Length: 313
Image (tube, rainbow, N blue to C red):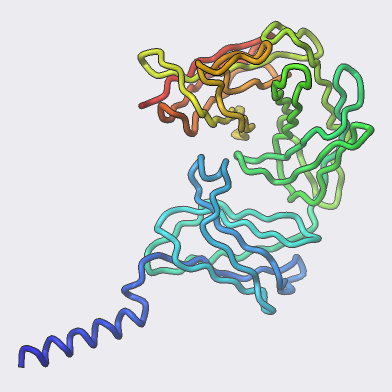
């Protein structure tokens, strides 16, 4: 009798598990259409963790492609919040942020794709057109569109959704190897229009961290240390501007034992160049050998700044 009852209970448990109750994780699903409410097939759908580090390093946790009806479904997601990204050639990349997932439940995330607008401009280094400079339109640390300058220093970032972005330029100074960032804040993109004349004038020199002077408004150097003044290594950080946009500094910190190359600062994890001066910036250390940390109320000046961020072991 006991054995019969046990076998019956086990059978019921197996049936329940087959029905899905014993499988952990949640689901994100939905439908993708164009502005005319027509379903779009073949849209790549990617799910990313919403954490700062996961966003910067683009830690994908699930993917699918829409079917003939524009439908998709991504299962087995841990409970948490996610960003869903929709990609299809001919359309602007679409983002849906902070979508909450709970175990055993389905979160509906639909999307409408359109062609968006574009950003264009020119990059000159010491008033000379510069080729192969990387350009990126950022919003809340997410790269929304990318471009590269041509032989004339011209670039175009096409098919960006309507919105406001921080435009990030990344240039590597050939003599010193220093990776220099320049940003233009609050660049507005409108539908089917080009936002032009977003130009950069970079003052490349060998006197880092000397004040470059106009037209370069200033450089920001960031060092990460713990309370005992030990310098962090392998640092990954972002600079968040007053509008909430973030510029990425992906290079690792120079370790104290590493041979210094030219005028590069030891333990300088960020060199942000020609930044607009003013208060309200925040530095976030997303990962390092000593942990994470942040510094708020950073005021940028018209000359070189050096900011120290305390990190946690």
